[in-house]
Image (cartoon, rainbow, N blue to C red; front, side, top):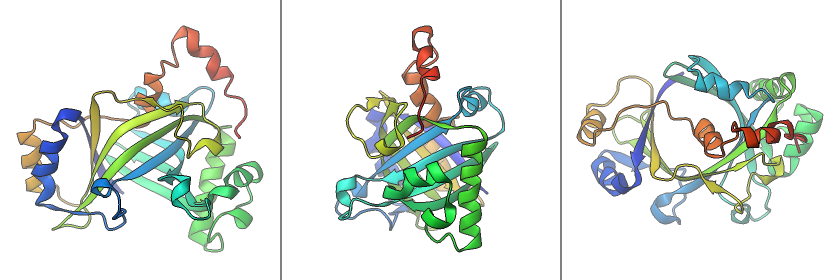
Length: 257
């Protein structure tokens, strides 16, 4: 497991923050070279049940909790065959520590996997025991709690690693927007997304081991305080889903696909 610290930062301070951290970081080598600031688009569909258990775990500050999601990157047009790999993720958090189970499936096979649960047929490298176990763990939660797609969250990410410690990662997540009750096949949808974070971006720090002194200085100088920032929770709140007039949508979650 590793630590994860999050900070909500006003958009007008983005350039100053970039300048403050630039001397200490290298761009994530997996980031695309042809995009502005090497940014890429992160897309997640979060799953929950009709009682919104995962949402309420976060809202009530439960120390040990999880998120179940499917994640993809960029746009379908960026892939020549329009069939990218997408990721089945079970993210677990215990206080400040996170761990993640992750397995891969081709985009065109995702709905078939969710419908049939056939790990051997649809999960990439499923013959590897660890991969099979991680995919099975996702499907276990998905089936056991009768999960449904609740919200799609999309944002642009600038990702970096420390020049001095490759285990220290910095991410700037901005232009965070969302779609309520998406279909699974809408992971790469761009139309209809609504802004979830109107005035801020999210700074994420992930690390194992010691926290670097230079980053502490940056946080102090910019008066940034660690917060319990959840893109999933805040995106749901932005849609006012728990207001009286919206509650019928919960019971209309309906089809998974």
